[in-house]
Image 1: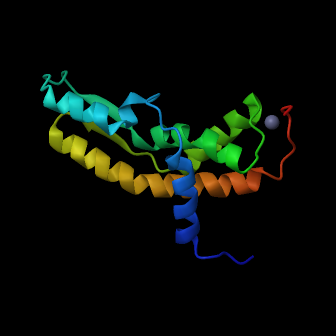
Image 2: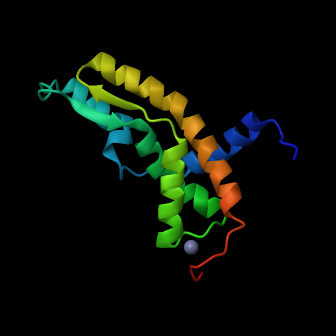
Image 3: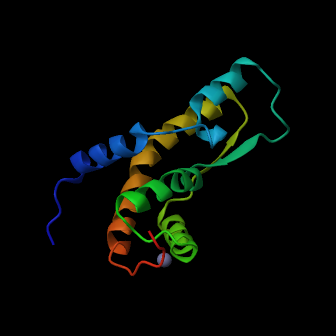
Length: 136
Ligand SMILES: [Zn+2]
């Protein structure tokens, strides 16, 4: 099987995916929310907040990717796709205690975004051949 250079394609899909409704349903992913937290200078809790970067990105993008590739999104298939994605995604957890931690987390997230998206898209391409259970 021949693969086209994937960077262009990923960019396009990424634009499609990120271009539309990124409502603040996940406040941790919203950088404005983070900025607010920093500038308000609330003293961090004892051991900070742990962020599971891969997990956040997977749950943010999985529904959109499955939809775009017309994969079955019934609860069973969704759960299967989710655990599959999490198994393939690198585990990146970061504990946020300071502004530096946050900056580091942002950088890692920006890098991971593309990687996670690539994983999800590959997964979706495989899954779209599976039987559909949901009625549309
Ligand atoms: Zn299904």
